[in-house]
Image 1 (cartoon, rainbow, N blue to C red):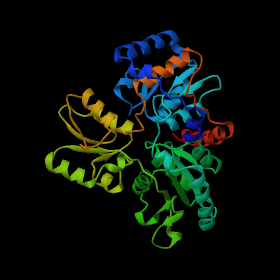
Image 2: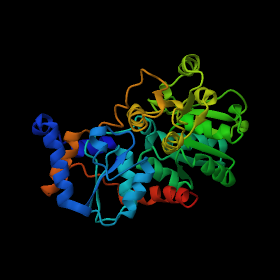
Image 3: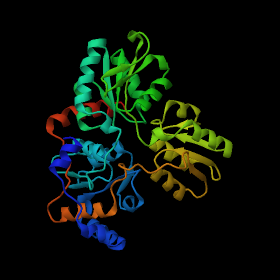
Image 4: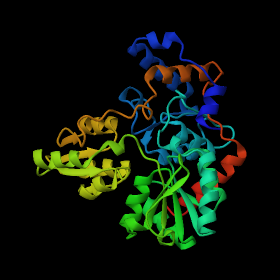
Length: 368
C-alpha cells in the first residue's frame, strides 16, 4: 500500500488535546506507557529524528538496521517506528504476523522514495528492456517503497544501503551487463564511479518524460540511474566546500554519498550515516569537522562531542521536513491508541508485495 492509499484509509488527525498538552505531561505519559507495556513495546528511532522523540527510542540507527532490530525482537507486540513510511514498511515485511508496526504520523515520508512509484517503474522497465533486452538487473536503495522493493525482487535484483552499495553493485554486475539503480541517482553515480565506471558509461532515466538522458551510443551504457535525489543532501554544494576550505583550512569535510558527485569528489570522506557517526566518535579531541548530512543529526553530534569543532557543511541547511515529521504529541497519541486497543496508523504491506520485497532484502542481507 502506498503512503497516499494509507493516508486515505487512515485519515486520523491528531486530537487537539495532544497539541495543547504541556511537554512535561507528554514526556511523563511516554514513560508511563513504556513502563506499563514493558517488552511488549519497542520504539526504534532513526538518527534524523528530533531530540524530543529520540530520547524515548529503545535503539537508534539507520533505516535497515532498525528494521532488522525489530525483526529480531520477537517479544515486542507493538513496534512504534519513529522514522518514515518506507522504514515502517520494511519493519512490517521483516516481522511476524502477531507483531504490529505503527507510524505515529502518517505524513512522515521521504521525498526521494516518492520520486519512484511502481507505475513509473513498470513503464521504465518495459521501455528499457526494449532497448537493452535481458541485460539489466534492477537495484533499489532501501529508501524506497515496498512496491519498488517488490518489483526489484521479482526481477532478480536486490536492495542496497549506503554502507553496502559498492558490494551490491559488484554483485549485480556478475549477474547482468547493466544495472538500473533506483531511486537516488547520486548514490548510484557515486558508487559506480568509485568502482571504476566512468561517467560517460552512466545514463539517467527521467520518469517524468519517460526518456533516457544520454549523449552517445546506448551500447556503451553500463549504469542506468533513476532521476531521483534526496532533497536535503542535494543542497550541499561546491560553494559550501569552498567556503569551509577558505574559513577553516584544517577542517575535515565528511559527506553522505547521497550528495552530488562534485561535492563527494571535493570532500575528504564520504560514507553512510553510520560511517559519519563512527568517524566523529573515533576522531581526536580538538579535531574539526564539517558534516554534509541532515541537520538534526549534525546538531546531535555537536551536542554529544563538545571536545570537537563540528559544523554543518551548509550553515543554512534546514532539517528534513518529512524525515523528522514525528513529534512528541504524535508519539503520545500513537501510544495512547495502543493502550486503548485501537492502534491507529498501523503499517501493513500486502502478502504478495511483502514476499517479493523480502526476496530483494534477503539477496542483500545474504551478502552483508
